[in-house]
Image (cartoon, rainbow, N blue to C red):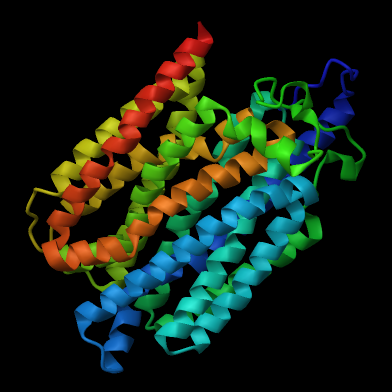
Length: 442
């Protein structure tokens, strides 16, 4: 999976075999670790109705409880977004392994704190803290991927890692749905999620390595398309200014940030509210709604694999073309969700939400993955990822409080009609990105 640099001799068959073995181990550890992070992230969405019920028992009105929890989701998203702007540069200067381990352990502690508290202010603090520390993990994984894999393998490697927040999220939701079906309360779900993540933290602490240098091998070549030119292969930037300036003056980077703004808002909306949507629309129980909500990330995992394959097969403009098609079709499906009426026991909303995940999450996975490494290389890949994701999650703040208010005031039809309009922003940005890529290719 590696491509040696011209200044290095071809590695021996034994070295290639050893490197491949450690690349597989590294990918597996990061996928497992980030899947554990989603247990301590999707738990809020899966148990949201149960947490709302506990607030109603404290004297809150049901509508007010939903809006308060939407506000907590918004606060958490803001904390996550702000964290991304910092943690990417931390990984580029200090290394990705520290990011990953710190984020996992911090998430365990904040999840336990959330489950031990019972008031809205403390819920807000615990959830914000959880999201801040989790922002360390993805940028750390991007940094490590840039060191372990050659640029020719960025798409494959990041596609596999992306399965951690898609198939991993689906597995986490399915698992928590089982727990709820067995009679677990929301606090017991949180405690269990924290315990599983701590076990995954221990595995990464024991075996995750920063780069092939740690096992006596050379690092593969960096992307020749990096905005840093010949310095893109440097593992550590010289100064913060030299790290940020080339990215912030790149038109392609700016457009990718706009794409992230719209697509992250849509993704976070489904991640947060799909269980509540299924409970309200088709009268699903909490356990059923948790299971139904897994179809969004599950179909997104299939989308990542298909989008990766198509992007490679369609040539230089492949990724750009996939992004344009995915954004436009997503807007169409959201329009259907915003206008169609469904029977109480219908599975049509479940399939349409799953279809949305399939159309949208493949293009979304490019942004803070392979495209970040293409633009940033080893030197600034984590920073590119952090800024792209950070901008996206600033937009995703509307997925909490704003969607809660829309669903309360206008119903889910009104909320999805608004989301269909929002989907036009990434669609327009996708067309511009395609044009820039075509201009560059010619």
